[in-house]
Image (cartoon, rainbow, N blue to C red):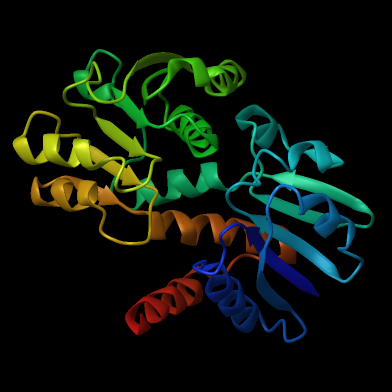
Length: 278
């Protein structure tokens, strides 16, 4: 069976390391997983070329939203979020899934975040940086942790329509705020879905001590640590990084594509080995 990760650019992806390690641990000798460069223009043709020997696809930027109209079925979570990072082929059907949301929740659980504080606590505030597809998944993750309201910092409110529509579907109330000066000074949870350089202003604020979160999830995994993650760690903040997210979302994909529980320890060991080699 075949599987692959699609995106543009894709050469940096560590998904092949994770999925191949899973196949080896599960004894799936006939399975292969590769990285394929694919932009939105090529996506329909690539999907059409996936025959009965294909188990599924992992999707990264810029394909998570573009794939939706090309699918036969979409899970309720992927539909709510408005993004699918996984395609599973069943017969001649294409099924869209979102493993980013449970991946975020699992990554945060590793640093002790298992639920939202009481609503009356100022630390109950969830602040999300960015308004793209990953931010929409972060909304659903916040809901999964029990948050009913989040604050989202965006550069251009006029481009936040997709985010606000996702918030309505997810059932989370959103307060939009400016990116440079968010109306939150000490969120209980900060989730950054923007590139490391874009969050540099927040790194400076954390270092100064005027915006120190209770916990941080930074979805970037390369280069690591980001300036924000480094500043947060220096301030004593528990940090979940993009590598933990990558691991857990990949584990969800392995389970969906193979029908077997993902061998998380083997996948984690392969990831750590690959990082040491770089």
